[in-house]
Every structure is written in C-alpha cells, then in structure tokens.
Length: 346
Figure (tube, helix red, strand yellow):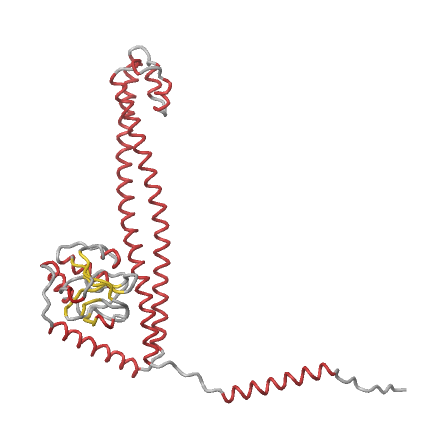
C-alpha cells in the first residue's frame, strides 16, 4: 500500500532568513538603479592631485640624487684605497725580499742567525715580543723589521677601511634602488591621472601654463634687479640658454635637468662647483631671507625640507626646472606650490 506523506514544511527560522535576504536584494537593486554614476574628477582636481604627486616625486628625486652622489664618491674612495693597498703590498713584498737576501747571504757564509730566522717569521710583532733586546740585531735588521711592521699595520688599516666603505656602498645602492622605485611610482600615478583627462582638458592645462610662463618672463625682464656678482650673472645667463630644455629626474645637463641639476650646471658654467642636491646647495654662500634683497642669479629655495631650488630672475620670478612633464622656464615664486625659505648668494 502506497505511503502518503505530507511534504515537509520549511521551518519558521528558514522562512525568516529567506524573506530577509529577498528584501535586501530588492533594496540593493533599487539603490543600484537610483545611484548616480560616479563622476570623473574635474580638470582642476586632477591638476591638484598631479601637482602633489610631482612634488612627492621631486622630494624622492633629491634623495635619489644624494644617494647617487654618495655612491659615486664611495666608488672613487674605494678605488683609491685599493690602489694604495696594491702599492703597499708590493712595497711589503720588496721589504721581505730584502730580508730574504740577507738570510741567503748568512746561509752561504755559514748559517742563518737565529735572529734572522725570527725576522722572516710571518709575525714581526711576535719577534719583537720574543727578542730580549734589540741589541741582538744589527741596525740594518732593526730598520728592516720596523719598516715591515709599519707597512703591515698600514695595509691592515687600509683593508679595514675599504671593507667598511664597501659595506656602506652596498647599503647606498639599496637606498638608491628604493628611491628610484619611489620616483617612478609617483610619476606613473601622475601620468595615469593625466591620461584620464580629455584631449581638450589637456590642451586647456597646457595653454594655462604657457600663459603663466609668458607672464613670468615678461615680469622678470621688466624688472631692474642687478645680478649678485659676475659669477651669478654668468650662471643666470647659462640657465637662460637652457629655457625649454626638458625636466628629467636625476639629470644634470646639458640637454635635460632636474631642479638642482640645473642650478649646479649653470654655476659650473661660471666656474663655481655646487653640491649636487638642493639641500646641500644651501651651504654654498650667504643666506638672504628677504625677497626684496634678492639679486638676479641668487639661488632660491622652497618647501620646508628645501627639496626645490631655482635661480632668481628678478621681480618675484625665477628660472627653474619644475618637474616631470615640464621644461626649464620662468615662473612666479607665488606659484611654486611651496613656501619660499631663503636665497643664497654664491
């Protein structure tokens, strides 16, 4: 006989869960239908974000420049020490050869003096400890031994110094790689934002900057500010000759520059060697804290950490290499994006 069972009814808890889920799905669907599409940032908003990224990239660039300069300096120092060690080892070998000749002469004349045997040991310091008195040795032997001792100590010190610098070099190379990666990351993020703009927006930004640059050049040339010195005048003229050259991080000319690369290159044309980074360049001369006291060609520094530098052009304007995507140009000190800290008269 067939069994007739009533279908199992869902529990009250299960019904409640299903009802709640269905209601939530309906609500989400309604919200999605009524939600306004996300708006793209405006041209000015993109510009503000891009400018901030470029500022961060320039900060990292100056750290990169400092690490690169340190790396190059360490490489030169290590090379010099290694050359000195090689020469010192040759001198030491010659001193030991001299003692060997002395021992050979004694052997041929009837045997090697015990004192000379000790002299030829690998540890001259140990010899002096064991010798009861230097009177046992000839003046020639004493002089030879002391020279060997001195040369061995000198070589040991130089090798230790080289080892320390090699360790420092490895650390500096690691820092250099990190800063390079940081710069590239900031620049890539900025470029991604710029790519989100329409062709018309990009053209508008370019025209706004061109107008600002023309106005800055006009204001600078209309001023009547004397140069700080013959060197400053020559450096400023050199910078003027590079107007329109592209900004490239880490570049020091002659065809592309970053901010401190431009100032160091310009002053090099005037016969003045400046440090590589903007922060280091602050110590190149006399500080000038008032804009009204600045003269054409003075170095001018911006931002609290001094990561940007340019050359004063007069009437509140500067010539500088601003950031990636721009060229060497005139610009008002009021539009740099960071506070003016002070000038330096070289």
